[in-house]
Image (tube, rainbow, N blue to C red; front, side, top):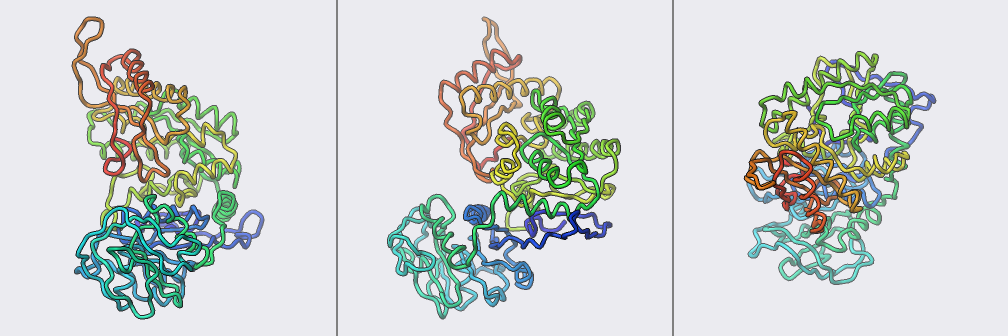
Length: 548
């Protein structure tokens, strides 16, 4: 499988090895309509926990960004025609054996470069400067004094609060560089060669702890790189529609619809592009929330008039999950079974060349295999990783380059209702990963009812659409309780509520005590088999949002 981080087009089409790419003119006969690819900033990833945050911050400047490996060849970068490069931070030391370093030819590409933390050290190291261990590690809040207020720091006050996180520092500048800012512990807190438009920051402008970091990045992408503000939901929709039409031509597309935000927006986008050439297949895997199957059929079949094929396969999923407790095995079983059921359903729905999915950027990031990138595998996603050889589809993933909040804005641009666009995320494997341990009909009934109560109370409190995600988890333990003067030995439900922007990081929500009391009271009284409710107060990282 190719590196999934290399997102080079708005519509990412992956083909089986045996398939040959087929170019078609759009139905208007205009090819791609002459529309230029969006201006972009490329981020080279050296393994920083903040790399994805950099990409998000650039996109907040309405400029497209994509992340590539740190060692991407300069010739490939040149072919992508970026307006600028950003080198991320990372945990390594440039003077260590086998330290990750960029292709030395990138300095000859003639585009502006911004190195952040380790990226600045790599820049200085390769261009003839000197990097050494710092006598005092600098981690946390710091204050810098800006020496030169033009360029990166244009329009900013001379003293700025920033966030440092480094153990090494530049001790000698490369030829042509000058000091742009300094701190008490970092004489070279910011450096630059304005003639070649090469810059380095020892601190992290992308994190919220650097209050004016966004302005620094805006100065880089707009003033230094000369980018406009063309990356908007409307521009994405317009370009994606043209690319979908050109790729698909007169062929048909099958989409696995779950009813979640991602697959719903993908369905609306593709339907906008090709109309009835799209057929959505909705598989009821028996792991859905209360009322989910009926709701999906009503909204997409009756209201949006999208061709919809419904397949009830709950029995086969539950049978194959019997006795399985390992979370990765659950996910793989669900993924394989979904493909099998889906494959049969598509034969009923009619021939199609393309299979569409609602894969998003966080799905791709969290599914990167160890060794494929400095990041390590967190968990596998059922819709990431390629197609079985027996399937004859080409894979169409129009949202693969988007973060979740961008997907929502695209959904609004497409006119989808609020209850779809702003519904909380729901995992592809469904309630199976919210049941720790074996999935059984009895345990599904418990977590399904508890989950419905959580959603109901969040909506009554006017918090459902304000919180990223809230749900119930059934724990694999039982505890002693007393109900009606009798001893009970029943299940424990954990409630999870988190705030996030894109799912990459998250913090637990401080729900009002009155709401927590109502949740616990209703779950214990209304869900048979539960006598205790707990509240999860861990953040991501180190925890993940879902428990499995």
